[in-house]
Amino acid sequence: MLLKERTESNELLALRYLNTRMELSPKEKFHYLNLEKGYEGEVKFDRLAAERLKEERYILNDLLLEVNNSYFQIDSLIISQSVIHLCDIKNLEGDCYLEGDKLFSKLTGREYQNPVNQIKRSGTLFRQLLQNLKLNFLVDVSVIFINPEFTLYQAPMDQPFILPTQLNRFLDDLNKTPSMLHEGHKKVAQNLLSLHQNTNRLTTLPKYTYDQLSKGIYCKNCKSFLVSIRNNVFLCDQCGEHEKIEHAILRNVKEFQLLFPEKKITTQRIYEWCNVDLSKKTFSRVLKKHYTPIGRTSSTYYV
Image (cartoon, rainbow, N blue to C red; front, side, top):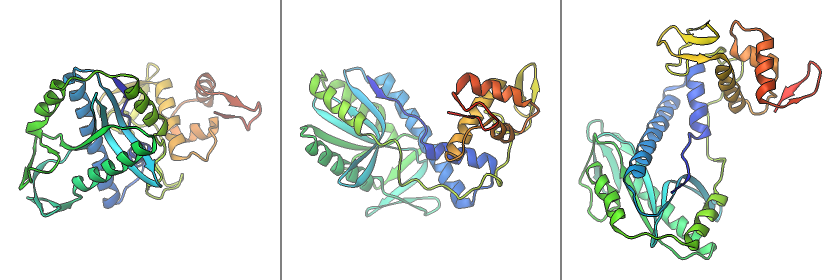
């Protein structure tokens, strides 16, 4: 049973918006593309787990927890009858090898952060969290390499790696273990959901200002600003994607809110942000329909 769905983090969403509206530095672009690729791998694991896991289980995705002033993230947490599984999902591709406790790309020699260190730290902190909650469960940790184009050389047999060729077997082995959940499992799941941190304090975004960002409504599919209004929809002149005007305006309001949380939502600001050939009355109508207006004068804003 899926108790917590996976959604894009605010960091990923903000970087996705900024990548469309400004020029990111090579380092920022690299970080953004890594987040996109990581999220893609996590969603792929979610689909596979949903298809193959049959017994009673609680699944909580993308948890951010804190214990003793230390934060740690869990990509996927699976509560079974006798074990809680912590899964760290990696979407690396190509040939890699381990040398000591370091992970390298065979082609480029680039060093990656060893995921074992991260998942072991998460496992240790998670066990401390369970102790603080006076909950007694076995905890198993795994690093799951989801990309079928990934190969790992010199992998020690005692490390918690699940390679692409082992993934189906890993899920099948979980199925072979009987799992009947009771109130104790429900209690730990509810505790973890209540302790989830919605804001990651370690998130860092590029510096940006309102004036330096490109204004306008872009295609939700290919991100092109070459869109035109036809028959009450936005039509992308580059890929042919179409989107209702109201949906496009709301999408851009949410984007504005995330990038500029300190600014109030007003008709004028959203009109300027979207920068398209629509009247202010259109924006005002959409805002009034979906948000609550505060004030009755030209200083009206929406929440």
